Amino acid sequence: MAAIRLDGLCKNYGDVAVLRSIDLCIEEGEFVVLVGPSGCGKSTLLRLIAGLEQISSGEIRIGDRVVNDLAPKDRDVAMVFQSYALYPHMTVRENMSFGLKLQGMARSRIEQIVQAAAEKLEIQNLLARKPKDLSGGQRQRVAMGRAMVREPKAFLFDEPLSNLDARLREQMRYEIRKLQRDLGTTSVYVTHDQIEAMTMADRIVAMRDGIAQQVGTPAELYGNPANLFVAGFIGTPAMNFLNGTVCNGIDVMVGTDRLAQIAPAHATPADGRVIVGIRPERILLSAPTQGVPSQIDLLEPTGLGTILHLRIAGQRLKVFTTERVTAGVEERVGISVNAADVLLFDPGTGLRLSTRSERA
Amino acid sequence: MFIEPHRTRYWLLHYALLGAFMLFALFPLFWLLKVSLTPNNLLYGEGIRLWPSQATFAHYESVIAHTQFPLFFRNSVIVSSATAALSTLLAAATGYGFSRFEFRGKYWIIGLLLVTQMFPLVMIIAPIFRLLSPLGLTNSLTGLVLVYTAFNVPFASLLMQSFFDAIPKELEEAALLDGAHRFTAFWRIVVPLTLPGLAATLGFVFTAAWSELLFALMLNSSSSVSTFPVGLLAFVSKFSVDFGQMMAAGVLALLPVCFFFAFIQRHLVQGLTAGAVKG
Image 1 (cartoon, rainbow over the protein chains, first blue to last red):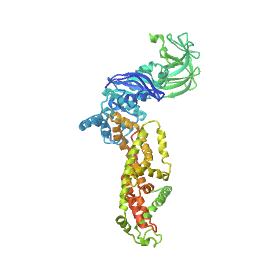
Image 2 (image 1 turned 45 degrees about the horizontal axis):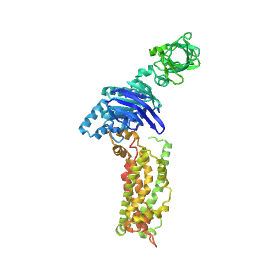
Image 3 (image 1 turned 45 degrees about the vertical axis):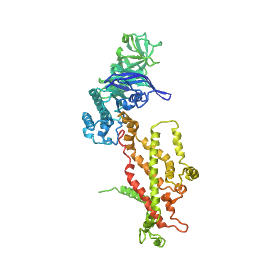
Image 4 (image 1 turned 90 degrees about the vertical axis):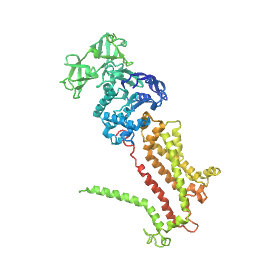
C-alpha cells in the first residue's frame, strides 16, 4: 500500500501531446477512477504509472520513491488488463503463481498464497483449468487473483469490465470494490463508463484531451461540475444544455420565458448569454398552465420512471420523472426548476459561472 | 437414420473432389515408389503397368551398399538441419524486432527483405562463388549452410513476424508487471506461444534446404561434400539413366522430410493462443 503522486506529468507522441501537465495525489488505500471518452489519455496515464510507457516530463512517486526511470517489475504495482491477458499456455494456478515464482518464493508458500486468494475469489475449483476453458467472469476473477497474490503497492485497472455483459459487469463492479475495501490497496481504475466511475470511486478524475478537467468525489462532480464537459459526461440521462440569457443579473431566460430566478450571478458575460445546465431528474412537471410551457415530443419509459423529451422555446429538453406521466405525445406540460438546480456556463470557455450565493 | 439426399450428394462431391486432388498430388510419388521397386529387366519390358509383376528391393540395396548416396544423405541432413536451426533462430530474432519495436527505416528494411525474394537465384551464382571462394567456403558444407541461411532468413523473418504479431502485447506487459525482465517475458511467455510458428518456420526452411540443387551443384564440386539432390544427378550417366536406383534414392531422401513433419505437425496445429484475450 502506498500513495501515488503525479507532478506535472506530460506525455507526447512525437508532436502530439497526449497528457498535459497532470497533477494528482492518490492517497494510500484510495480508489481513484480515471474517466473520460476514448482518446482522452486515461489509459496512457495508467500505463505511465505502470511503467509500460516512458513519461516525457514530470514526476511519478509511488510511496516515497520516484519511479520515473524504474522498470515495471521494480515498481511493485499490479495491473488488470481489459483483455485480462492471462497466459494461455498456463493453468489458472500457474497464472497466479507466475509472479511469485519470479520472486523466488518457496513452492509451499506460493501454494498457500494462491490457495488463499482462490478461496477469496471463489475459484478454487478452476485452478487446474486453462484460460480458454473459463467464462468471461471467471477470467476476470483469475486476473484479479493474479494481481492480488503479489500484495502490490497499488492495483491498476484498465477497463477491466468492458468485455463483460451488463449484468455481470454490475456484479463484478461490486466484487472489485468490495475486494479493494477488504485489502485496502491503493487503486487506480480506468473506465469510459461514468456509471462505473460514480459507483466505485472515492474520487473521480474526469479527463478530456489529456487534461484533468476536474478531480473530486462523485457527489462533487455530479452536483458541482467545473465545466460543460464534466457536466455533460457525468449523469444519465445526460444534463440538458439550453441557450439562455441572464437578465437583470438574476432572471434566467430561455427564449422569452423565465426559467428561474437566481442569486445574483457572478461574472456573467457582458451580453448576458449563457448556457443553462439542468439535470433531467431535477426538473419539475406541472399542469400546462403553470410554469414554463413545453410540448412533449416523445416518452421513454425506463421502468424506474419515464424520460420525457420536451421542446421548449425551440430547444430540446429531457426530463426524468419517477411520477406517473398522464400527458401523451404532442400534449403540453409546464415545467419549473429550483434556482439551486440551475447551473450556468460561459458559452465561450465552457466554464461554470458561479453565483454569489455559492461563493459566499 | 434418415439422411437428406442433397446432404449426401454434397458429401459425395466433397470427397470426390478431395480424392481427385489427392490422386493428382500423390500419383508422382506413387510412380516414384513403383519404379524404385521394379527390377531393371521389367522396367521397359512390361510397358505401362500400375504395379510390376515382380517387386524387389535390389535398387535400395545397391544404393545403400554400392553408391556414395549414404554420404550425400548425411551431408544433406547436416546442411539442412544446420540451415533450419540457424535460419529460424535469426528469423525469430528479426521477426520479434519487427513485431514489437518501432525504429527508423523499419518499413524500408522490410521492403528490402521482400525485394531479395524477387531475383532468380541464377543471377547471383557467380558473385556468390567469387565471394565464397577466397574464404575457402566453396567445396564446404559450412559455405552451403551460410548461403542457404542468407536466402531463407528474409522470408522466414516475415513469417515469424506474423506469428509474433498474433500474440497480444498485453501478455508480455502482464509478465513485465508480474516482475519479469524483458527477456524472461519473451522466454517464458512469447516463446511457448510461438512454438507453432517456430515449427512452421523450421519445416519451411528445412524443406527448402533439403531440396536445393542449384547452389549445391555450383559451389561444391567435390563429391565428398555433395548433398543428395546433386547425388541424384550421378545416376544420370552419359549413355543411360539408372532409373531404378535414382528412384530408390529419391524414396530414401523423402523419409527425413516425412519424419520431420510428423515430428512438428503437433505444433503446426494452431489455436494455442485461443482464450488469451476476450472470449
